[in-house]
Image (cartoon, rainbow, N blue to C red; front, side, top):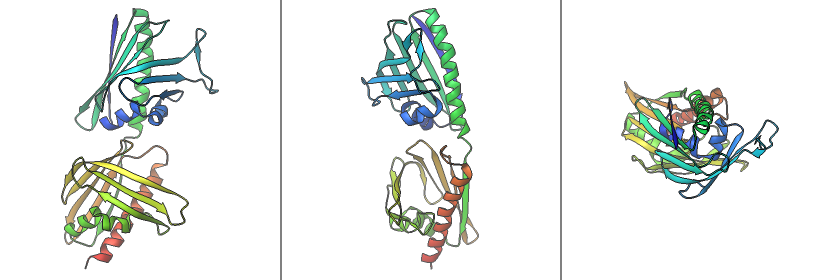
Length: 279
């Protein structure tokens, strides 16, 4: 058996790298012509299918390029190992090992165990290309966006209005034709934040969820969103006012300017509400 060890450092959080590997929608964003189907459970079947530019399944030496195997090991944010038996190439065992580095970076080690040197060489070239695609995709999203506002209120009151559900439902929307009908906030490391946002006419709505990774009352809180993006909000006393700043990872579906405008409008709404209830 031949082993390939391929390593790459990615300037992105371990949560974002893991999501890109183990979420079908996120996977397809960097492997444009490859889809993955599985329930991401140990022992489950996993199928990768390659398509050409016309949307047809690609073929190689008269065979459809469909990799069908099983998940041998899956450990959240640590390891994904799959086994692919093949008549043409023999048994292939492929592992992704993740390690969190300083500076919100991730080391990704891919280990391939294959039958022959020829297969090992062929997979090495393709895998290096794929790892570079993953790195480029995640790092293109790494430029954070920042919004801020200064609230004419003491920091303790600002923190309360920002974190307590009975206040959140009064400001957590960008415009007057939207509303936040409910919010829950387990304000601790590992705790969950969730809020529902809806258009008042009922035409659209969505749930926003995140898990806290840092809570320092009343100076700072950091959470990881459901799609792996990270946001940090800080609170700083400046004379008799409070500077509130949020820095967040952008998503890649909408322009950065649009995202910045939307988050800023919500923060402006927070300022307006907080100043209206603080005497």
